[in-house]
Length: 130
Length: 110
Image 1: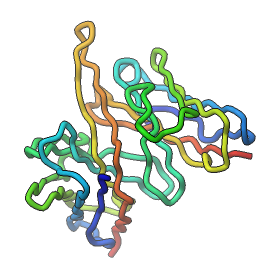
Image 2 (image 1 turned 180 degrees about the horizontal axis):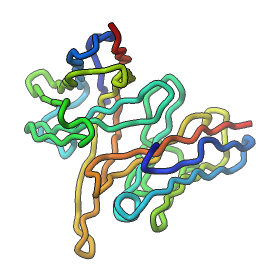
Image 3 (image 1 turned 90 degrees about the vertical axis):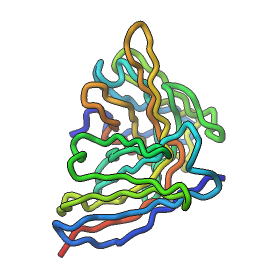
């Protein structure tokens, strides 16, 4: 059974870089049709997608965070990681890693996207405070 | 404010049926597949529905979903107290080039 587990500091100072790692067990991060993603949920708020990475290293990010976000993957350790630079209190949230399916097909000349997360980690709380 | 609009809350009695709506636009729901998630407070979201109306293995048939135009609907029949949770719709927005979610709907089973 595939499981994901987030790890990293629970407290980050303003202007510093938030770094989290997701360890995948029960399956390989490589060679599958799935992407590996990060999402977050601010206190009392809804879900927000941060970005996805493929095992080959291909990435795509939420445009609103793109200038501050970097995802990386370590297939030898079956892990992928998130770095979020220049954090502020607004970045305080529960951060989730997840397996993500992302695909685009053509229908009547238009691109149709399938996008969902089918396996989630339990989440880790990150507080930005001095 | 979320790009996808959901009612903040819905409620129904055990055994009854409830529907949760999710409204968007042509750049998201209108032209892309919709997914639905259940989140019991304090836990991670769980995928209930993907590609508009498909259920992952292990999700009971009491959960169903549909899409029409720029709106989607999640239906839950035979409500149980264990269904009390927050429910989120999600999809891709082709204009914003990002994954998006609704603001969530709190289901109370009275």
